[in-house]
Image (cartoon, rainbow, N blue to C red):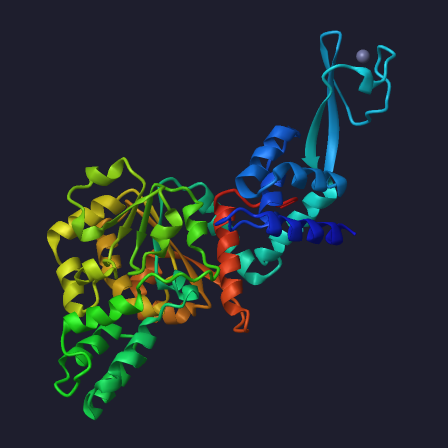
Length: 414
Ligand SMILES: [Zn+2]
């Protein structure tokens, strides 16, 4: 019964959606649940109007499905009275409905609230082991000031961009037999930068002969794509934080941020004050845009020029000092970057706190690949079985965790 009503309204919501609106009817109900008060029609109208066409009609449909609990507020002899039965009698002897200025106040009724809460709990995998292990860290994150999301390639993957190993596999095609052996070795060690060095320096390789060729290829691979695949960029934007840092070359976080953020390539930041009073997305490793593709940090030499440059590193330290950093979308594949970044963090000791979402990661592997990282970062480990739904499930649980951190997930009795 309840499910049938909701699915009917959800279908209707989707047909009324305004362009570019990515929210679902359940997202909206979640927001309604979060408002503990009973509110006037105007509030609901405005919320609906932000998301769909014909909000008035949709509201009346919601009312018809009895999803609201309604109170009637009216004035009688200068006193404000409230009742939930319009047909009842007031102390003055008249019917409630016979008073002037009867105002209806709406709140989602409790069975619908319970449904949304259960749905949210399911999305968090509330009864699973991941949640039990992660809950305390997520709660800690709720209270953190100065949170800075630090975004890695995992966030761009659902949009169809290649991973490091996929790039190496593709670019090694033109290499000589002897270099292929070396590339295979480094691939198995997740040392992708060493792979790129071998690819560029292989005299037999006519496909990619130098670093400019490599960056041209990578620029093509990460050109913005107009793909509607679900992803977590909007969820990061919805955290409403002033600073976001990404090591990704693609510009999907910028597109999701629309006009709310200005984007800058880290090396182009002239002074810290220039970014302090603005909402900023910093591309730490450059951008794949054709006009600035040389900005991409791709080879070992690029990394050295960035991470071993005193001026850049002081700048990065002052940006990160006193911040709590939340890594999202990084894996063991990003081992080299993590290693470099942790050195910077170490120099910042005591000034920052570090957290990371990691998917199906082995703590033991982490500890052996990246001991420094493992020691200072609190890992929010998400374990998901490798089914066909894998990508969707990762996106959903990351979304729920981010909403939870932001106190935007309605949960009853926890
Ligand atoms: Zn009265």
